[in-house]
Length: 332
Image (tube, rainbow, N blue to C red; front, side, top):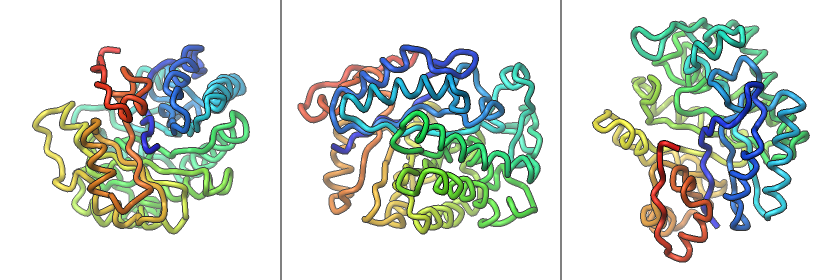
């Protein structure tokens, strides 16, 4: 089927970034319909990438072992599971970073908003280290924990997005200053992961139009993401995952977003041959229209659900049978 579990931050790891036992239960519940693709919550690639409390990692033996239990359970139920890898960058919480002995980092010394902490620009050496750490995290995930693949988190104002967009990236070296320069960090990470686990095990998530965490305000946004997605296509990765901005409108009514919130431009660019995952506030009716009408000739369009999956772990079955969905509780 074409329903995907969207990555959602669950904050269910211990202080060392090890997933707690009920993480396995959580993913197993959502693997109750065979053939489902699950994408995990964002997982930190290294200690300094873990800028929020109680998010999981994939760098230590104990973390890898805990994730292997999750993966084995999901596989036993006939489903696939990909890990989403990230670093939080300037979107980190200062208290969490300080407790770990790290500084706030980003592409440039640009805070998310006026009055927010100012990050330290990463040096070229820092950047190269991060690229290696992404690759090692991918190896740990695929060859250690047994994940089917890796989704790179390039969305929602986190580290890779902070390099992609000129609203944050003010660099003038090879890691900024132009559309190819701003693309280089994310593309080099992608290539390093391809080299580590193979192109058929690599996906990328982007949120071009979202203004969350200071993003989506750059003048040349469309050509920036056109270039980046074109390069990803040439790298022949497994899939592209795009988020619409409708979820942001629900969170912040009245927020200004770009009119092309449905990502149609980028879907056309990506083409018909490779899978593409679309996310962003879909329900049973809008998801069906997306697949059966909007992209009826595109057999590789998948629809990612997030919040509805929290209260409906058997979501694909409910959608197939026309069973009403239980309302999710955001407080959980």
